[in-house]
Structures are given as C-alpha cells and as structure tokens.
Amino acid sequence: MARTLQQILDEITNRIKTDPEVAPYIDVDTPSKVAEWKLWRYIVAVCIYLHEQLWDILKGELELIASRAVPGTAAWLQRQVLLFQYSVTTPQVVVLIDGYPTYNPVLPELRIVKRCSVKQQIDRLVIVKVAKQDSMGNLVPLTMTELNSLKGYVAKIQFAGTKINVISLVSDKLYIQADIYYDGEYVDSLVKTNVILAVENYLATLSFDGVLSNSGLEDAMQSVAGVKDVVLRQVIARPDTTAITDPGTIKLVFPNYTEVKKDYETAAGYVIRENTATYKLEDGNNLTMILAV
Image 1 (cartoon, rainbow, N blue to C red):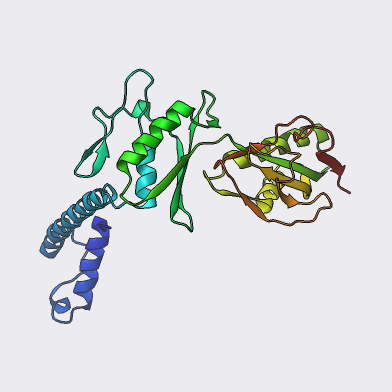
Image 2 (image 1 turned 90 degrees about the vertical axis):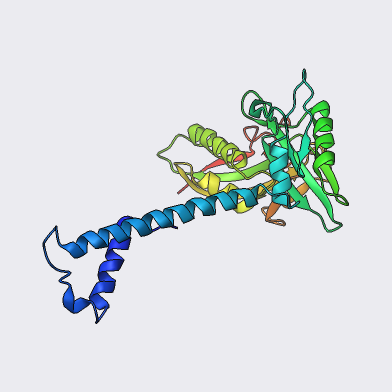
C-alpha cells in the first residue's frame, strides 16, 4: 500500500538525521521554508509517492485479472452463478471466451439469483444452493423453469469431471418456545412484539447457508429493551418438506429446557420462524412473559 506524501517526507528527514555523513552538513531543524535541501526532499518525495501509487494501480489490475481467472474453485463457481441471467421472453445463452463464461449482451437486471453458496461434500459432490428475492425483498426459491435454466447454465460452465447438484428450496422453519424475563417498567405486550421482531431480524441477517445457533437466538432476544433474561424452553428446526409434527425434525432444545444441539445448518440456505398455526412465535405460550423480580 502506497505511503502518504507526509510519511515519505518524514522518512527522508529521519534518514538525514541519522546518516553520519550527511547530518553534519544539513540543518534539518532550520525554520526556513526555502532551504534548498527541503526543495530537493520534496521533489524526491513526490517522485517516490507517484511511483508507489503506480505500483498500487498495477497491483489492483493484477488482482482483478486473478479474480476473473477460471480456477474452478467454489468461490469462482459462486461468482458465476450470481452472474446467471434469465428472461421469460428472450433466451439467455452463455458463451465461453477463452474458457471464461459471459453473455452478449450482459444485462445485470436479468440476474435473478441473489444468494448462492457452493460446498463440496465428502463424496466430492458439489452442492450449489440458490435463492432469489420476491417483490418484498424476501428470499424465495427459483421456479422450476428458472432452476432448470440455471442447471443448464452450470452444466455448460462446470469443469470436466465435476458433479454438481443445484438446488433451490423453500425456506427452513424454526419453532421456538422461550421464557422472557422482562423489566416491569416496560409493557409486556410491547416487549413481546419486539422480541419477535428481533428473532426475525436475526434469521434474516444470517449469512446465506450459514448456521443458526441457540446462543445467537438468545443474544437477539436479550438485545431487546426491557428484556432481563431469556431461557429457551424448546427449539425445533426443520426443512420445509418436513412437518413440524414429524419425528424427523431437528431438536435443538428439548421441551424440558435441555439443549441437545447447539446449532443448525439449513437445508435451503435460509430460515424463517415457524408459520404453522399454533406453532407461531406469537401463538399461545410459545413466548412466556415473566416479570423479573
């Protein structure tokens, strides 16, 4: 990274001060603003400064070239999936130029994939999870037509010998029961509403295909004004295809407050709070408000 002009001026001055052959002949402490040595110091410093700026520009260009290379890594594949274009009316055909996939023309407004993760499994199968956004900005799965088009795109750009499974699923669901201890100076109904909003915000801000945790949920709830403490009573996670009453759901906290699993990796890559009737966070005693004493 290029130094500032002042940093270079200061270094030249310090070098002069510490050089036994030069220091005796130059008064570096002179108040004169027109001393000849100061003029030469400034000229040299500007030349060095411009030279370092040019090196930074070259470094940036080389890094850009490297980032656009075709190494076939997970990061490269993720970047290409996010560049996928889709149109209902006009077929979008990707072309390969020197191995680099591109469109002609490039139309950023047709890039429907807004979230993507790429992970290699133990059996060397690569899983690509994707999602788009609806008009409200919520993550939703691609339609079957969109997904098939994306699969065709990935098949065209993938490296020979690789096995890639592209999936786009409806959001996972998270069921929560918790005891919320609140300060009596706050209205319990308002605190409850804000706790629900805090949970929604926590789930919405998780990185795509990230991992949600019990501690993250607790921290989100405890950040609400008026909340003194939070105790998770029961936490259940599930893919959308698994019913909340199905034994195949993932139990993070048993109904007796026993934590059996600290975190959960989503199947879809994103998760929302449970939306099944009577299991919603605002239903019944899923959130029990307890006055802290």
